Amino acid sequence: MNLYSVNQEAYILLATIYGGILIGFIYDLYKAVREIFHPKKFATNLQDIIFWTIISVVAFYILIFSNQGDLRFYNFLGFMLGVLVYQYLLSKWIVKTLTLVFNAIKRFIWDVIQLILYPCRVGICLLGVPYDYCKKKTKPVYYKSKRLIALPGRMMKDTKRTIKNYFKKK
Image (cartoon, rainbow, N blue to C red):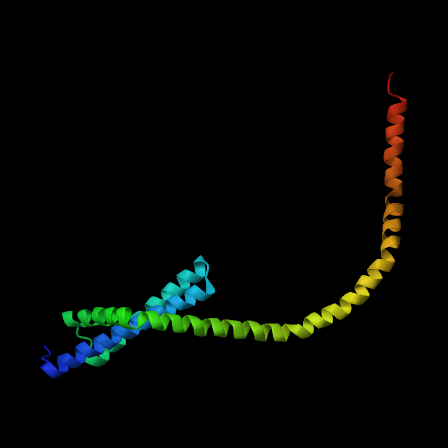
C-alpha cells in the first residue's frame, strides 16, 4: 500500500488536471478536424477509434508517471476538473484558432494541387484545339459513313415493311 504525502497527492491532482486540459484540447482538435473535412460514416468511426485510443494513452501515461498507476478518486476528479476548466476558459478561442489554421492549411493544399495540375490542364487544352479542329473537319465524313453503313439494314427493314404492306389484305 502506497502512502503519499500531501505534496505528492497535490502533484498527482495537478498532473491529472493537466491531463484533463490536454484531453480537452485533443477533443477540440478532433472537433475542428471533423468540422473542416466533414468525413463520411466510415471515416468518422475510424476517427472515433483513433480519438479514444489517444485519450486512453494520454490518461494512462499521466497515471503511470504521476502516481505509478494507482487509481484514486481524486485522479478522476482531476481529469474531470481539467476538462471543465479547459472547456469554460480556453475551448472557445482554441476552436476558433484551430478552425482558422485548418482552413488556411486546406486552402494552401488546394492551391498547391491547382498549381501542380495547371501544366496538365494547359497540355489538355493544347491537345484539345487540334482535336476540336479535326472533329469539325471529320464530322460530316463520320455521319455520312454512319449512314452508309446503316444503309443495308434500313433497306432490309423498308423492304420487309413494303412486302408486308403489299400482301396485307384489304
